[in-house]
Length: 208
Image: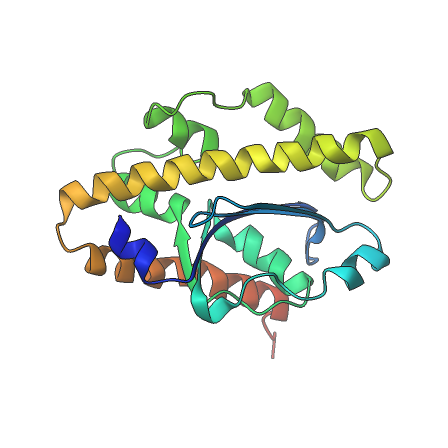
């Protein structure tokens, strides 16, 4: 575990909430970061041009940060929508779980299902997750003021759950391969592919 942490100035778990419509880039609503060296949590509300301008620069340099997310295509898509640089180093807990179980399970790779398999306690209720995701999608950008901290806390819960999942995955992978440098390199290679997918989706594919 320490070998991973020692290679990066920042090891950051992050999650966006956003509004999405078919064929269009996401509209970021908020983002929460947790830097694992220090434990510092950063919450940013991104609705409205003033907030977008205030948070116009990512708090973490991509050249010195390992970003951790569950299905990072969504997070990188939001990074690009904010005008941030695409992460270079990504550990995607969704991808790592797929690598472990692909061919053995057809479904069950969402964050809650995956965390349940690892017996992580205090998992968010599925109804609560569906409620807030629907609320965020259907009410953009006109959220009631009293719901802003609730949405941020919902986003934080996903970050904290992804953190626990990441640590469990690393511990498991260390038992399967004693070369943690190789594990990390492979994880970054596969995680980066989702970041590149997000870039392709944002650019669009020429028809001619």
